[in-house]
Length: 188
Image (cartoon, rainbow, N blue to C red; front, side, top):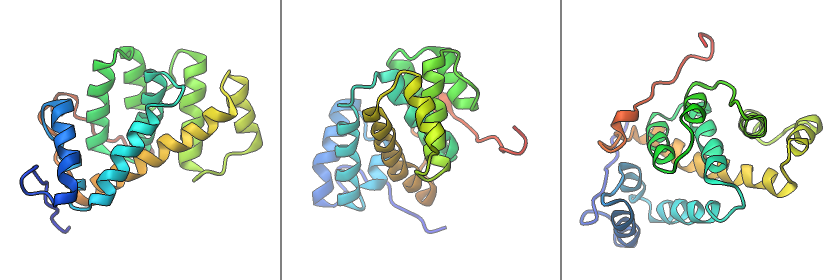
């Protein structure tokens, strides 16, 4: 596989530096994902901008993490599962929800499980859910706006998951305690 650089603020292309500086201010370090994305300033800007927009949805932090972690698991993204496990823990997402998302098992809360299930449908169908699947999601208490917000979160994960797959991004020390290994769907 081609080796990709993980940029620092100093080594990054000029157009990426402001985004890496913002990340360092927010997290007190530059996550390797962002350092890798810095090679393509437009990707880094797109990802950080879309992440900010996703945080403006009317979904709770737990609901947003369900969308992100479900996509991470289905896409087999080792880096993002470790990172979002840490982020979820810091945000107060219930431990049983985090564990279910890491394992691909049902979430105990029926409404949250409907979100996890619908997110998986969007990912696995490549955006072609059946009418019955959309109806089940709406009947669980979600809205048409939320249907579209699941697509937004899924789009965000395509950017990060695919970058990590191609670049084989090293998991940061801050996320390493939550390392994750994908289970073979056949063995699961």
